[in-house]
Image (cartoon, rainbow, N blue to C red; front, side, top):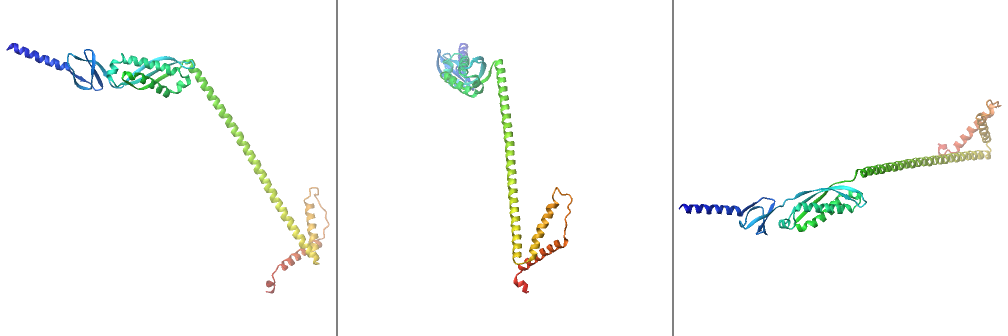
Length: 313
């Protein structure tokens, strides 16, 4: 009985060992490959899995999460023979664990060297100015090339970012002087354009002022001409009235005409700059009579314009 008990305990212990050896707990975010006699047979997914103990064994524990790979700094010669230093960061994810485990040895080192060689190829085909200003284009081209190369390994490259591109210090100083010269050039151009615009505006203002002055003089001359024209018409009308009065035998019209000319002559003598004192013989009776004649002529003209009906009333 004691022997049977020992054998039972041994079998129980062996069974427990077999169960422990055959049960595999795969954590989330990982896949494990299974090898039977050294050959790949299947992939274990996250959770509890069973394998044949002592025959099957876990080959490669593959991380299926997205990983980050730092690309070390390296020197690159651009297309215009400028030496720069560049580094990057690569994001990738394993999609086919069996290929990632058996198609490439030391995945991360292989990807690191692959990205470094493609960085030299892409940056070496560009000039320095384009290299510094077209980061997005560089990243996109690197992503296409590296992802295509890692596809047989069951790896998907999600992003590649150029972290830094550093030119030599003497080249940085030369670029700073060039930028300063360009800014001074633009400032001088803007200042010259502003001065030219100011001169143009002043010339336009002077031109407008001259045009407005000419238009004002033209308007004044036109109004003076109209005034002289109306004055001439008034004088002609007065002369016509006097002539008609003379023709009708009115002697007062002659006195009016003479008095008018006499008064105009006195006004001209009074406003003359050469004569300060005038001794003029004046017959007051004749001038008063002339003025009286003027009054009679005006009265007769008013009576002649009065309507017949009003006179009868």
